[in-house]
Length: 195
Ligand SMILES: [Zn+2]
Image (cartoon, rainbow, N blue to C red; front, side, top):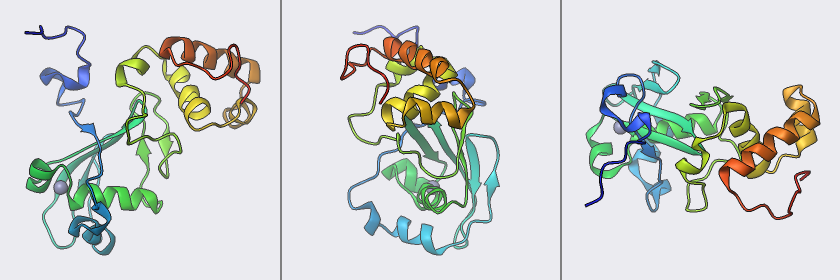
């Protein structure tokens, strides 16, 4: 048998579960747009609110309050709910409500490593198999990760990103180069970078 890795990320360890929520990357079930959960999400008001940067209470008008983890992590969105629906189906009205409200600009979602707040789902967000592995992005600093997500995955140009973050393009170029090296991502142009 494979031994338990000693490099388990801290969000997977039981000791840290009080502060670092355990949650898997969100995967939308098949035909989720036809689900009752999605319908409820769009119809029912939510009188809950944030608990931490990663967790909130979702209290839909036709139900009880539930604790929901909804946080950006690496290049993914992690979600989990305390309700039975989530437990059995990995999908529920509470998580659906967070997604709906995020898409419509009603809530902001925080990135666990970079601390950046996103008012709508970022373009780099991946739900399918072409998202980078969590391990692949583990060694990146917050600044490198932010540059990687924005420029490498969302294809924002280096100059544009530098302008948005108030930094010199050279600084951003260096960040991005280090991030790519660490992530071992094959780049389309050797030594390239100015997308
Ligand atoms: Zn739920």
